[in-house]
Image (cartoon, rainbow, N blue to C red; front, side, top):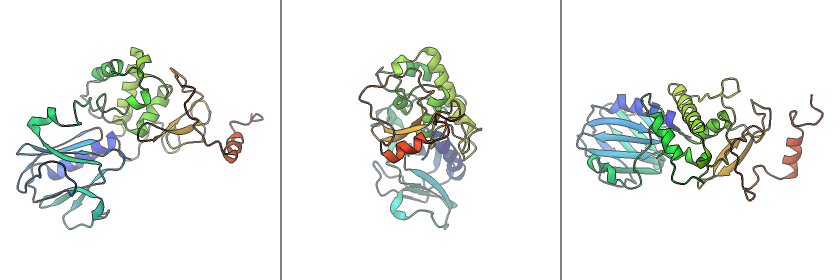
Length: 294
């Protein structure tokens, strides 16, 4: 699934291929908004978290939001696509290159001068992938979040607070800061907020130039908890668990043994693991959970 570092690299590649070039063809079967016209020059390509924008010299802006399924590909003219046409959401063709967006849930255009009135976009938080991002303002946005009872795990994905953090990074950030996924954002101290923001920025920037995400180099696969359900936590050797959370039911990985700071779990929170007897037996026999283990 795409995250801020992936979109940042994508924007850089599209910038080299498209900026300053005249568009010869545009196709977007589900476009919402005015259609970009052939002959216009591409002026800029920018990323903000999972948002990617391409602007032409007449002020028209194409906005795509990758969410969990979207991606941009870049092909030489005439080169076969790696995905079928039915997954096409937008394509921009120049004399040399074709930039193709597949499966993005949001594909829409607006005029640059009306950005402030663009529905659903609003004011985005700083992009943590950028070296000049104002991290202090992100800290303040966290500490002044309008719903203090919101779970920190959900606030980390709010693009109005910060851009770039996706599902993988939110799990890794919470683990690195030892914060419970059930922490309320309103319980964060200033020190907590600074640590969360600095950790997020450090992880994202460390992965800008590599397709393989690494947040914990000492772990096989490079990640501390994400995708490691049932395995040993690299910090405390507890067993990593997973559950679905949020409106989009994204998988949330965490270690219940050491991620306990600011835990505000409710009695009605559903269990994380499958209660099937086979799963219980499997977990009980893991080496780091056996009572006779040394």
